[in-house]
Image (cartoon, rainbow, N blue to C red; front, side, top):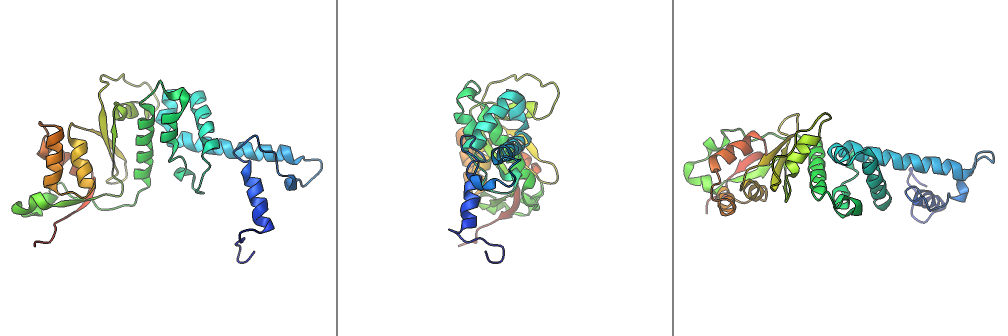
Length: 266
């Protein structure tokens, strides 16, 4: 070991790998070299540590996905989370960064197939956390477009805010999220229609809003760097009644973009 770094293929590295191998797999026996005192069997101590690791990861998932936990119930959620933990070990020491693959796992989880919208609710929750931890950045003011020459408005390009995410769903995932994010009685859904959701954090609080028809095509195109004209065309193609001024105002009020740019004139 040099400067605290253990090179590959050393006895220390091998011991670490053997110790870590069974932390998320209860079928793996405790490594023999963890024994320290004859009166304190290694297997028992290792099982306690293994259980603590698993429980901490399940608790992290419960904190990241409270709406999913509320929708499924605590017992169901913890069983599903335990299955995910064993299949997907963490790759980062930061617990809030764990569970990015959880929504996809929920979508495949056999016992959650009767809740087809659950994975999309989980995706909104993940976007909520990512927005919360995203870098701060200024937002385009509601009157920001007023500074753009009228004859260049069609060419303007919007720069996505680091905390802005757009998610599409075949289910009313945004409404389900909103009704189950907080404790207390939830209001029943009045529609089973597909919903698209915009997640932003223009200041301190994360904002989650359901987009109107054509809104996802509009915001999605702008987030991909397309011009205002191209984004508007995509929105009108998806929804003939798309209200461009209202959607522009709502998008700017949500703080979805941090700057406006114009390509250089030829």
